[in-house]
Length: 114
Image (cartoon, rainbow, N blue to C red):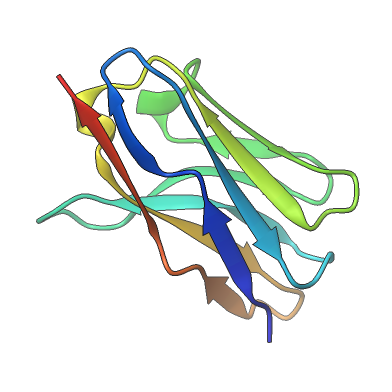
C-alpha cells in the first residue's frame, strides 16, 4: 500500500499561482503526478513525472505548469502559474508502482476566479 497526502489547493484569482504537493509513503515509483476532474467532465492527466525525471503535460497547461520531485522521491510538486478559470477542478495525486499497481490521493480543490 502507498499512502498519498496532498496539499496546496485553494482559491486564487485568474493569473495567480498555486503549488500543489503530494507526499508518498514510499519513495519508489514508476510514474507520479496529477490528474484533475472538473464537474461534468472526465478525469484528465495534467502532468506526470517518472523516476528518470521524464515529464508529460496536458497541452493546455504546457508553459504554465511545472512538475518536479524532491531528491528523496517521496514528494512531487505541481507549480501552477498563470491560472485560468478553466483550470478549476479537483486535482488528484497519482502514483504508479512497479507491477502497475496504481494509487490515488483524496483530491484537493483548485478554484480559479475570473
